[in-house]
Image 1: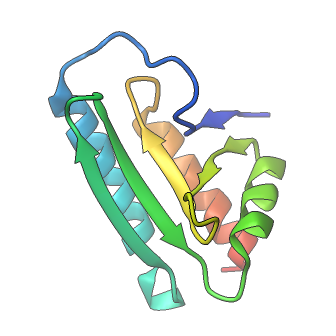
Image 2: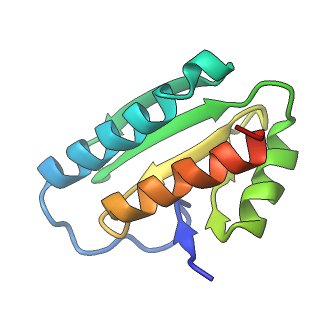
Length: 113
């Protein structure tokens, strides 16, 4: 089974240049925004000092903790926002474009779309 780790609590990979982080964060945000017509709410941003980007996702009709657990069944490791109301995905040097595409598919599966 594939494992996609989008947590912040793991050590970051060596800094690869922020342009790659920016591109993958934009890619993840765009992939999630493709699902906005299905009710997903997406926010995103960059933390250049830390060398990471972030995307939060609020899924319709699914508690964040339930979504987090459902994604774990797909091999996706993520976190919740501090308020525990949204999924939080961190984009670091260890996250590939393929990981992001896999994440989108997993989100679609747990949403039943």
